[in-house]
Image 1 (cartoon, protein in one colour):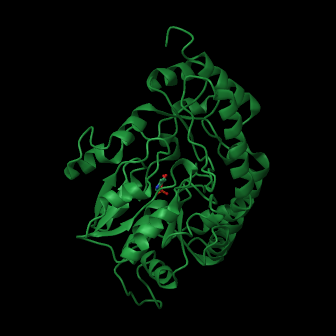
Image 2: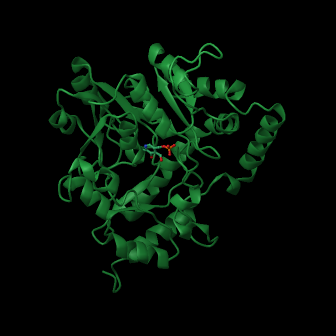
Image 3: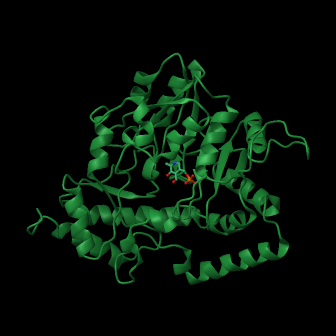
Length: 388
Ligand SMILES: Cc1ncc(COP(=O)(O)O)c(C=O)c1O
């Protein structure tokens, strides 16, 4: 469902040892790596490759970590989103409201079930959707909204829930970048009808390949998703729905069981690193990411600054040995696959501006003081020379 290799989504510059890397994966942490190799060996010996005890254990632990009753392991975050919509009975003729400033998967899930994504702009400061934005896009055909906790910053969800609930409109949280983030003390993913997570290797909780989960407090929805992920089969050799294969692998679950225990600590390390980056970058030419709202959270999956001279800034960072990336250079409504929606350049201006100005700086739990200092110094020196 998501064949893109990890390295192809990472900046090439991240590979050289002396540079400030954009991210570090598990092989850079010898103790954790050794523990993960052990569990891989155990699964290899047990042969519990599809579903099985590792998956069941992870599903329960992850649901608990999200404050939800049910957790269902699936093959990717994209599959989780698609299954949420399918289980809610959304299909052709239905509209689903989606922010245009997100990873393409949020909209793809809507298209996969045959519904129409209604792409909306985002708040220019938060880079997130808000209740007034959603309200302006409602129609008689609106069946669901997918708020995206983009970059790890929580969406102000209560006003969206208050808008949707009385109208019978479902709220499916795309929490693929916000594992264990809190909103008003509650965990994201458990606030709407369903919460969807990705365990793509670079995520705050990442496996060694593709993986995802859906969490929910709705038993019926959970039961439907369990059918959808594995041939609609119940009981054995009886197929209630023509579905397919989109399970979480036993190997991924075993790895995620180990890594889940570190999630809170890693999120805190990300917040600490973000605070230092904020302090260092205050007063430089870049616009800092909106901090967490007083009743919200930010788990800094990404630390995204803005600059009108974004491309020159990235060149300057690269020359100074600091890796960077762009999330996302093209909003969904301007992607070729959505040209049929008829939303041309200029139609959703806040997202288009964010796409043109955003620059993701290195952030990961084990980021070192040196990496932060070098990143700050490189941004500070941008604009002091001929590149201004
Ligand atoms: C916001 C968002 N939604 C959905 C997805 C899809 O997740 P996956 O890559 O596991 O299919 C991702 C992950 O890349 C994401 O960042």
